[in-house]
Length: 228
Image (cartoon, rainbow, N blue to C red; front, top):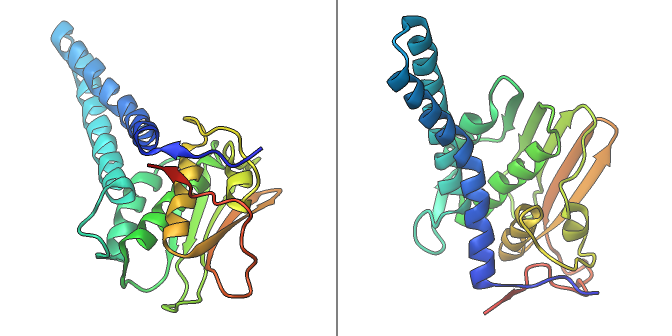
């Protein structure tokens, strides 16, 4: 058994499916609200429909802004991004009636892929507490050797499908729509020269990304393998 590799086309297709999955729910709610406005003359029902449209439009906007930074090019190769921008889009997506976000770390310019790694770790952490909870992001000090930590606290936390194996470099047979998120996160970590670790406790999941050093053993498999 080996860690699965994806063609670039398959990687792009799965990531696009992931983004569409995130956005389709609020967009569908907007469509439903518009249908109610067309069919209803009752003022109370029209008010409820308008509230639904407004709330869903804000949710769709927040998800698209997050995805643009977490998955998009976000400038030229090697570009730096202000971590306060990452905090703002993460807060727009994760600070709601089910989850809360606590962000620790002074705002600074960070390499594009490091910022994308932080945001993707946030997504993995949020999916670990499907009933809601608290997501805590710690960027650490501005240092080459400082680890990034994202912790999710909530009831009955669990790692998303494939995350434990992918983060540890263990063998994975296939990458599908359920495991594409942690897989893509490993790609970003590899680009940043970082190792990932997932720690599961009774009421929390902690995701850690730290710089690889000469003392770190080379992984037998490359979790970031992408076929041309």
